Image (tube, rainbow, N blue to C red):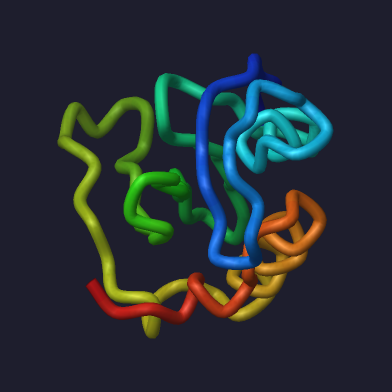
Length: 113
């Protein structure tokens, strides 16, 4: 995993709304989790394992999670969004745990776009 973060603004289905308080702001709480960083109204974390690299993004305004497959550093390709079904289960479980710890309904991870 990589990259820690700063706080931003956000919302959550569980009644958490951004009131400027880092204790109740889901994005600020995600930024406190290992590897997460916040930019504007989104939080991102990077994972690498078994030869695959992923960027995972949580978008607070729409309460959704998007998985991106990141090419090898030497590949020169562009990251592409991927279906949840192609993402390793342990990674998806970790994302749900992080969302839950940040006060975001972990079920949004399963939401189809």
